[in-house]
Length: 153
Image 1 (cartoon, rainbow, N blue to C red):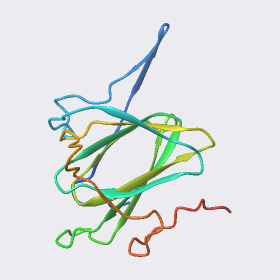
Image 2: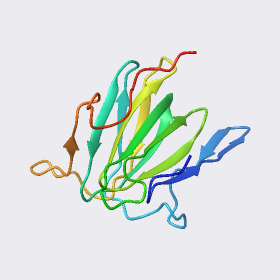
Image 3: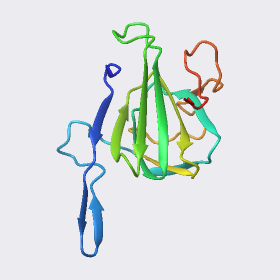
Image 4: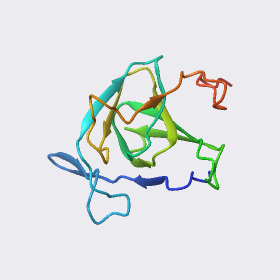
């Protein structure tokens, strides 16, 4: 899959030992790193689509720490060489990864596998309660060429 312009993905490494495990989710010496303003966790129940939205200024850094999530990106940037393209990622317990999402890229996610997906985000800007940098579209917006329904076959 060709990644959308400015999107980065890093496979995360689980380091087990006799006591349990450790997994680094962000390091300042990784190319995905940029200053981040806060950290939060959001959950998505099975059968729910948390989509679509984008930011004009903010970069997001998603890590699914519980369950599995299908994260979908749509490049609506008119000047982007990957404009109009979609990226789909399956991240979480079975595929630990860090996903960097640039401004002006629509994104959303849904839980996979019948359990709640817990997504951690390290956004580059603080959430502004009075003037949020968040622009939404419905999950089934016909302007975005993606169908959230599960693929059976």
